[in-house]
Length: 168
Image (tube, rainbow, N blue to C red):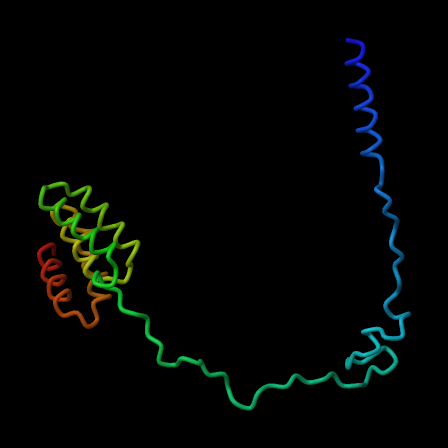
């Protein structure tokens, strides 16, 4: 028992001495920047205290304005045809809707919207589910979103407008 106490005491002493040791680091001397002959301050184009009337250097700008490297860039269209996960979710949602499980169908469609948020068909499908649930306010909002995204998709435009007319 006495040997254990002595061993612990020795470890404690080493720990305290190790913490108190500075590791051999000494302070680094600080030198004034202006005292060096190659000082950045001496190479500056800005006026010094000795010559306050010296004008400041003017920045140079390119002669032509900046133009994007890809001026005609358009985001790729997002439709269920581009993403197999969205297609699978649409199929699941359709089965859930047909079986009357509207809550799960809505959740599945919301997940598909998180994957492809610019797809108007997904908003229309979710609007249909909300209509079946009796949530007419949300049905109208989802139809408006589908219409705003369906710029060239006449089918989705027509279906969304028809559904929106039903809830008004």
